[in-house]
Length: 140
Image (cartoon, rainbow, N blue to C red; front, side):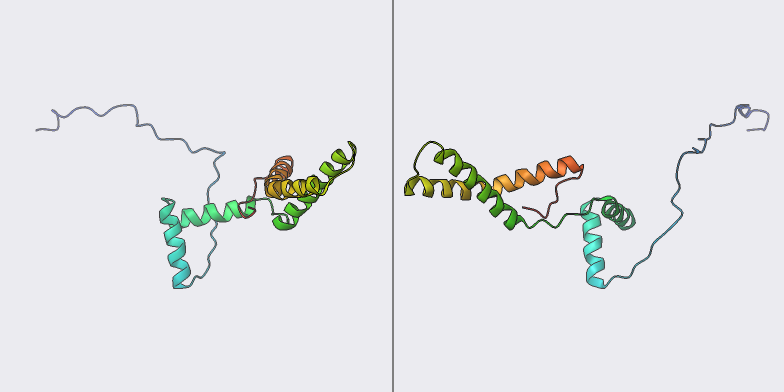
């Protein structure tokens, strides 16, 4: 084929995506040293998330940096306080209706023990909802 038989080139240049001025480029890096065992753990976690190690590490670091610090709430102590609260409220309600029997006291105590963990969990969820943070996975 001769040069005269070829198609003329287009007068309109191909579209080139314009660089966004609002786009933030990642230009900084952070390095760390890991043992072989630690590296294996990180690689396995990244692979299970379907990400490259660098991407997974960036996401993990940013998630940690952006998270609200967990409050030091002892879940066992909170559950016991919720049981006491439930017991006191039920005692006052029952006492206002007349004398209490040993059997009614035992039933109230059993009920308070049966709902204390649920009430503690509900309390924490409500508290963290007001603070705008997510419930911690560490708290049962």
